[in-house]
Image (cartoon, rainbow, N blue to C red):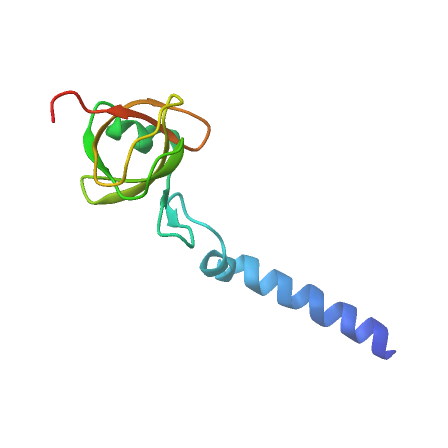
Length: 107
């Protein structure tokens, strides 16, 4: 048997074994993971649980930055205004991969 044919056969057998036993699952993303910055990256359904919740701006929001809501670090943006770090904020909407926050009037 030629070396190239042997290599092709070996690769085919390895792929069959990996998929037959589900070994690829260890190297694929799950529904929730963390990005390098520690910001949660979840599906739309689980992201909605933060709507209407209050939190604290960790970084200045000009207009985007990081907020903490119920112990979770989230990427957020304002509706255009500047919000200083340490200010109380409330999540009012969900945008493309970010939450929209306003200064919390109840603070």
